[in-house]
Amino acid sequence: MAKIGILTGGGDCPGLNSVIRAVVRKSINEKFEIVGIKNGWKGLIENDTIALDLQSVSGILPKGGTILGTSRTNPYKQAGDVQKVITTYKKLGLTALIVVGGEDTLGVATKLVNEGLNIVGVPKTIDNDLSATDYTFGFDTAINIATECIDRLHTTAESHHRIIVVEVMGRHAGWIAIESGIAGGADVILIPEVPIDMDEVCAMIQKRHARGKTFSIVVVAEGAQFKQGSMVLKEQKLDSFGHVRLGGIGETLAEEIEKRTGYETRVSVLGHIQRGGSPTAFDRVLGTRFGVKAVELVKEKKFGHMVALSGNKIISVTLEKATGTLKTVDPEYYELAKVFFG
Ligand code: F6P
Image 1 (cartoon, rainbow, N blue to C red):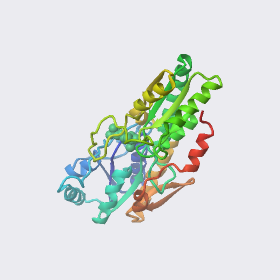
Image 2: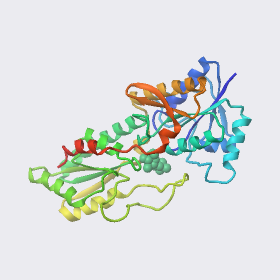
Image 3: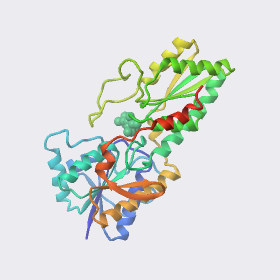
Image 4: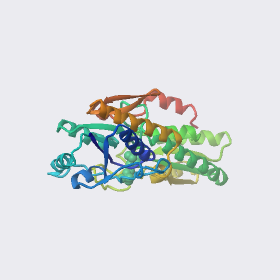
């Protein structure tokens, strides 16, 4: 009987439990044994597992987070950890491992395929920055949360005649900023792909004021940077995977806008609210389709592949293709967003 392991790694996001449930249900239908690896790669390093059955996935579909837990542990950071991962994989007698993660977790998976592990990937991240898939699950929930926040910030900005800068997540891609900004009717949207020109930002705000508007909403992605100067970071700390922790641009931007325009400005950093809570119907369905397809790929022995969304079809692509380059916002899309600036 085939035995499948499943782990969720990197930042959590809504929809992870939909994938776990689908993988378990489909595996049981196929008469595969299924084991949950706890806390991402850390669980394979430490042989920390949990048996999964119908009972363990009952009622988890609408729940945010992941019942398996997660971590940003990178086995390639600490000498000996990769060997521990391989040893646990063998000890557990796994036929295949389903890895649910973003760029970092799937990057590790890509390397482990070359070490001989049978891995199938599932693309997860609120950032939507994975290549070779139209959408990652978690993104739709994040933009809906951010849009609701922008709607709420509109009413207070309007009442107080203020500028409100809304800092959203997204790492080095502007997907959350551009989509929540368009949906929320932001007056300026700033993304990592286009360096910030302060003269232009202030000119757009002034333009609004000149036509009688006494408030503005500026959405900025945490990874956006000023045209001049270095990247603004609140702290220099690295996360456990080894990446610098982003954040802080919103505050600097708000100070600069107030200084240059004289308009009272506030900042609201949405942070982990964007990742919390119940997934949207879209993310539940996408996670479910991804989960079922991942087990089908195991059945077909299509290892080293990742499930992906292409149009409305679930396809498979190589992990290498998915993790090779970051999917960023293209200039054409930003031009569309700009129609509504100022
Ligand atoms: O990759 C998802 C994400 O939420 C990014 O948008 C953000 O920069 C990062 O994770 C935050 O990481 P942490 O949860 O470790 O603070």
